[in-house]
Every structure is written in C-alpha cells, then in structure tokens.
Amino acid sequence: MKSHNIPLDGLMTGNTRVLIADSDTEVRSSLTDILGEQTKYEVKSAVNGFAAGIECERFRPHVLVLDIHLIENPRDIMDVLRESDELQVTRVIATSGKLTDGQVAQLTQQGFSAAIRKPFTVRQVIEAIEKAHTSVFT
Image (cartoon, rainbow, N blue to C red; front, side):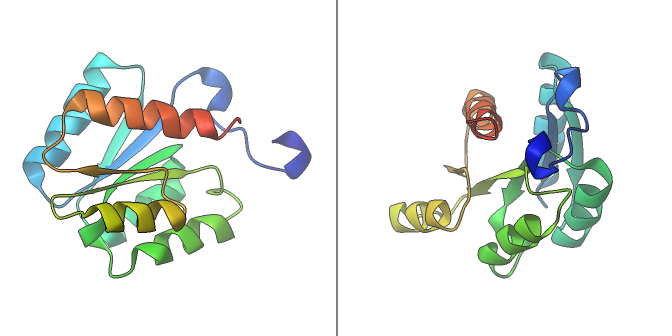
C-alpha cells in the first residue's frame, strides 16, 4: 500500500471503519448500535446517498454497507471511490430487499465486495465486512 501511495490512516490501529448507509431507520440504527457495541469496528451511519458521500470523505471507511436504493446507478459509487485517492481502499457491500441472483452477480462484476439480501442477520453483515476488509490486503 505504501508503494502505491495508498493512505494507511486507521489501518494500523486495528479498528476497521464501517459506514452504514441506509434510509431505513431501524436497519441503520440496529446495525450501527450492534456493530459499535459488539465489535471493535468504528461505526458511523448515513441516512441517504448525499450524506453517505460526505461521510465517506470525512470518515474514510474501510467498508461501506450501502442500501443500493439510495443511489440511482450502483456503478457510479464504484467509479467515485476508485477515482478518489483517499477512498480507493474502501470496499462496498450492497444491501437490498429486492436483489435477484442476476443482480447479485452484476453488482459483484461492478466491483462490489458482496451483496446481501434483506432481511439479513448481523452475523451475515459481520462476515461480509470481514471478507471485504481482508480483501484489501490480498
């Protein structure tokens, strides 16, 4: 990462930064609270796509858990992250209650680390976060 000038901010602390972006108050609050209390993650949340963009710039999450219905075109978020020097290491996990198998495959092809169908368990989210964050280093 150093040889490619990728910032190491927060990576050495051992704390994974996770941003939860979901308009559903219950999902957002539950994930934020549970992940913040039961893991060593640093967790922030955003209620819409605009707020998620601002929070990404400020917080520089390692993993963004994003309800894909907050954005018009899921590919756009991947393009924005890859064009930003500070956010290239951010991995994105898509969530939705309406994902087909074909859409899951398409999101993965577009660069999403995972796609999780709602309703999901916290365990599923943690496993996806761990897998996505680990992929930064492999």
